[in-house]
Length: 128
Image (cartoon, rainbow, N blue to C red; front, side, top):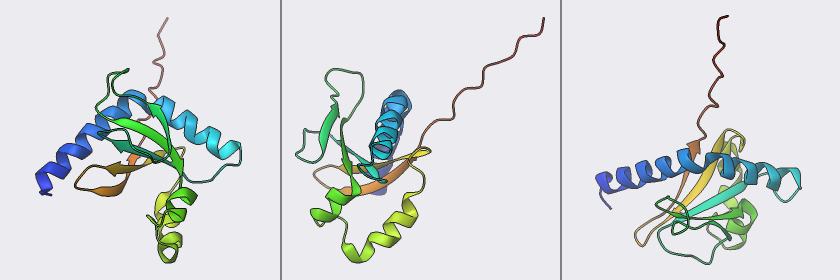
């Protein structure tokens, strides 16, 4: 895959995350608070995939990707993340409240990316 193709994919996912970040963040927080995992992972794919659970359908909302939710432990079980690389992956993972871990899945790539959630817009104070 060419660098320009990868850049277009990343920009497309970033645009989707800007549109749906509140939903992704709420799911990530719920996964952690319910003790399911400290490492929520989202899957972004152009086609429906059998990995994780579907959460957003690009045909029903205006996004470019299908999004599923999963957890890091499932990626280890499936040997997508190798056990000997797990600690390094966890240290890269960071805070799921600040950025989404997304496994981008296309016919040509399967790659993890970390997309920061947009900062909440500060409410402007009005002068009276």
